[in-house]
Image: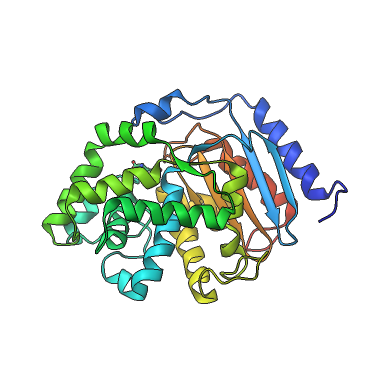
Length: 313
Ligand code: GLN
């Protein structure tokens, strides 16, 4: 690591400055009451390149609710537990509908389209839960996040989890509906409890970028050389992030940013530039698809400037 200011440092601070000044900030999610309290003017960006250099700007050390970004990590854990058998329970095609949509489930016999829409993530959570107590599984997920980010301070925001538990009727409908098809094995309230709590993990951009490194480096932690997942699995998780990570905005994200990415309604996005960088951005205002409005714009500016799109310059 060098202390000289790099092109990446300059790009990150200029983009953060530009985003701070923009008036178009999107709308903060309000359907989870606790998320409605977040400052729409917040903006954080953190990039960790292949050499381990960290470029960070704005509110990069403020924890935010990672929400659906947690689904990348629960998918990783579930694949570790059951391998490719996971794909019997959930598909891997883009849904073309909203993150919390129920319509496809009826046509497709309770099998969710992919692991990143809510129904799919609830099915994945149920897989991890089987054979364990909810508390143990949450401990395992948290342990995994702390290990990947190399930071023991990462925790669940209990107020956010409770807020969603009180108001998550749509997710309860999805879970009950899947249960009626026999897609969920555990009591619905247990599966949902784990799901709401892993969505409520709070992390900073810096922690999230650290946690994403294994997806940049073919499944290895670049610092220790330790394997988190086999290369083939990292590649496939990235593929699902590219095609499904932004719900009905996945095509637009690929078109504009050109990287595997996963968004959350807390306004965070984790993006992976394979072999190059792990990137986390946070801007709480969302677009119509529930993806961070300025987060996407910032990533578009960054990948363009650095030439990082997987589709070429
Ligand atoms: N916990 C949120 C929900 O289930 C996650 C949604 C999201 O981040 N897109 O509605």
